[in-house]
Image 1 (cartoon, one colour):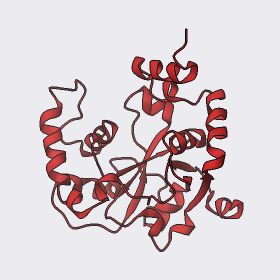
Image 2 (cartoon, helix red, strand yellow):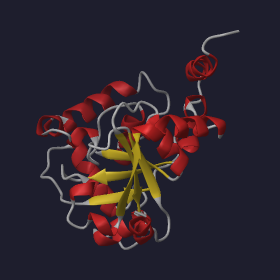
Image 3 (cartoon, rainbow, N blue to C red):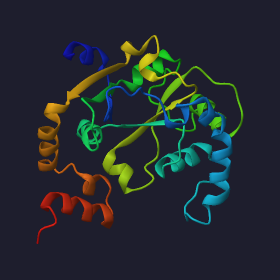
Length: 231
């Protein structure tokens, strides 16, 4: 495993934690053909109804900005969340894990983009190759058999703390099932027997829900978990 991870590392490395090792690396909207078919309709409805609920919506022509906002607030999109920090990925892998093994994936975004024809490193949202994959989310279009690693703007404090970055996917092929995935992707398994110990270590390091989701509700939840509700 150490050799596989070393072969992926080359420049920046991104991480993603998943609480069940059986899950594929596939964005939420790509998990079924039905969900993908409704993607443009959901995105347009979100745009039409968001402004009265959110004061700082993107400009109407800023489709990447809208897609980031949708992902941020839980709409199923073609974006897959990653982080630049391995401890954050570990937290998300173990926070709700009930499976025999959790996973932390390690991604080389530069190698991913290079293999898929993006030779300029990590893409900014308005790069033509990024927009090519983002714009079909808002209109009916044929799937594009490509993936790109993109660097989003920091929209709020939570994205800053979580060091959020994304891959954007043009079709339903899981990232870990692509024929070339071993050139840019590796995975670490975390057996169930080790999960409680690692979660306790993350807590000592200050990586908990109150830190990653900085609002009062999550602060209270984190304190309740840490003290058992005692005075």
